[in-house]
Length: 335
Image 1 (cartoon, rainbow, N blue to C red):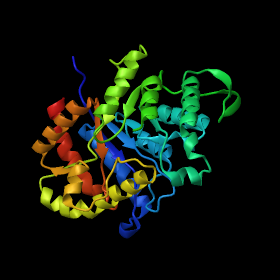
Image 2: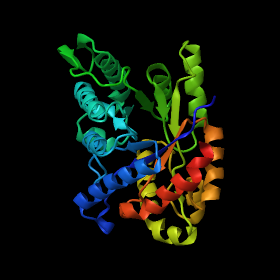
Image 3: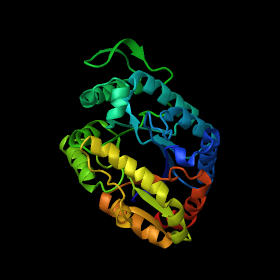
Image 4: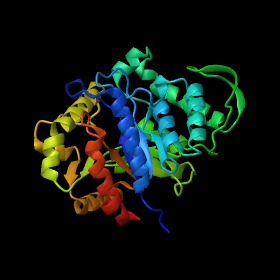
């Protein structure tokens, strides 16, 4: 029997200066929204990370994950993604285990190599070292989550005798890997329990699964999480477009600039309404959302569908209609 499609929300807690909200209220309202979403039947909530961004893009996901864990009981809590080369893997393991314990075994650690030049410069970490760091870090995480006591002498990380105590509730601890480039794809196939990305990703998913098969690793239990860059469900698409357009343009333009700095064409700047369509942005009625999700899932082989929840600068409550309509009229079509 085919497993049901899981549905997730995605938060970055951005607070652009031109639409600035009280940060404490923004964080509190977003967590309250996750609590309501859980009651409506949402399966997952994912958190995102960046650093040194003027709009306050959250730089510290694991404390937020712990806060959500304490307010919920069923929804699974994941990172999409933690920028692993910018972190000490031992501390990531300890903090992740703590969140898993607080949540009763509901944490999903998603990691990626990162790409923004300014972040690596700010942390004084060479951008070109990120792949090598990821290899060592994932090895360290796996050994710590498995309960080993060991020392480690690598090119980038060196530890005396270390062990993770207490261990996470989940054994094994779910470890997702994300990315767009060939090295990230190969690493996700070889070292991950799942692959996580956003937007059109069929080529990457096929490559991951083919590589796993070639390595003799299971593809039956390997999960894939992805979604449309923006899918918002409403009774009044025209009004919602008017309200969200500037906020969506702000977000996409900033991503396009970041990716362009490293020669990646994952996002394009918005110069016309047609560019929103090219970026996969949809604000639609529930019945249209069902068709768009069904098409995306079939094309990209995902087992978990997720997407951004709050356009940057709008209050969390703005997305309540989307969350409720998805839960009541869209998600049941996939159960």
